Amino acid sequence: MKGMYMAYVGSYSYTGSARGITVYDVDVEKGVFKERCQVDVDNSSYVVPSADGKVLYSIADEGVVSFRIHENGSITKLNTASIRGMRGCHLSVDPDGKYLFVAGYHDGKATVMHLNPDGTIGDIAAGIYHKGLGSVAERMFRPHVSCVRMTPDKKYIMVADLGVDQIKVYRLNEQDKNLILVDTVPCDLESAPRNFIFSSDGRFMYLMYEVKNVIDVYTYETGPRVPKVEKIQTISTTGDNRLSQLTAACAMRMTADEKYLFCSNAGDNTISIYTRDAETGLLSLICCLPVSGEYPKDIAIFPDGRHVASINHETGSITFFRVNYEEGLLVMCARSVSVDEPNCCALVKVRD
Image 1 (cartoon, rainbow, N blue to C red):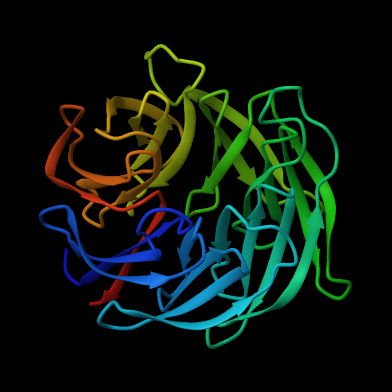
Image 2 (image 1 turned 90 degrees about the vertical axis):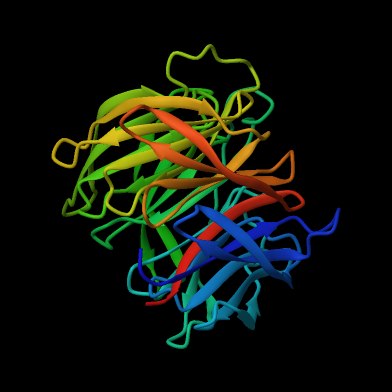
């Protein structure tokens, strides 16, 4: 693959030696990261690049932080903005670079931040605290917002709440700075919907459940008042592997060509790989294999689609594999690298 790529790994900084974001040079051919430096962020629990790859956004204790991504891959801080809530757990951006969406696990808040033309973070466009009770299970007795994204048609904002087992659909009312609830997608009790992604053509949504350990596939269509969302498949995140009570689906990513989808599982510490039918949206499991680390909290898929890095939170490591789709194998291709309590990884092309 032509071009220069960098990896930015967010870590908790209250223990160990990690300072927040660790910057890595990416060797695409060998499928490995090489550490370059660290940048101070207070407990970077998630990082995401802007739509144009010029800015990196990170969660921090004080809210959200923006960094300029330079052509050599280094990053410099632009600004910090408060979300007027507890520290978030997930970030996403809209395709036009107008908004930053923040999911609040601890306080059940979904926050929409304005983004300025230079990539800096502006003021709060809207925010809402979820209310209600989930099941009596330990992780799900109150709202825990885990993922907030704009829908492909740019008409709605969808919010996954694994505490109350629902996907809420909102319209953004910028004038009044609020989110207007227009629909709810109910999920099974104690399923814990954690993360969802859309196909680039906007036709399909993939919803991963932390406790139920499945991925639901939905068709998505624009509606005049509410979107039309219809479930067409449910598939296990661990294949035929016997689930333990500690198994928790963690992360879900697609290859750049969207032919394959990856899912990581804590507890049994595996990555599952699926083929994705572009026409029907359906998934087929290729394999579910161990990652040589504990609690794979995130996955980084290399731009060649033939290498993958597992971000292992509990073991404080990143492990690297070559993917053999034909044989259904993950083959370790490099020595692991150490980083304290990594949470997430953004892999960004910085130069052609």
